Image (cartoon, rainbow, N blue to C red; front, side, top):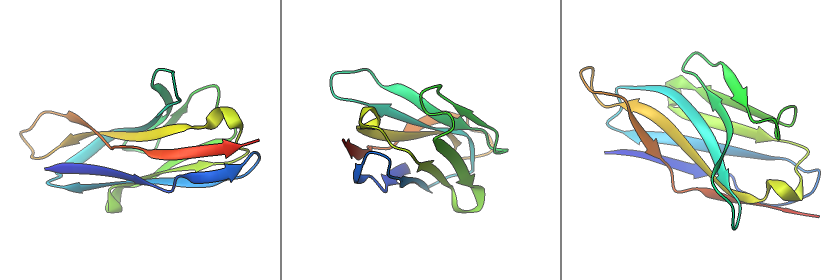
Length: 121
């Protein structure tokens, strides 16, 4: 059983910063790409940032220059450093990862349950 658990969300004023974490645990053989997504009330889930197993990042235009994605492969943990936060960044933030549980397994995508980020104006 594989679990992804997000943490670090909370209430912050506009212009402030937060650091989200996503910890993967369970029967994990290897983790490929990981990513952060968010869903604001009444809107569809959207991509925030992704990172390859080698550490190459990719960002949505809306967060470029403000958010930084990183990962610690030894800890099976991914991070999202968010700075210069805006009220429009308010959303439930989810992480995902493409994970194999054994060497012969196919890559399966796993999702966390989300952590809420609220940015006040």
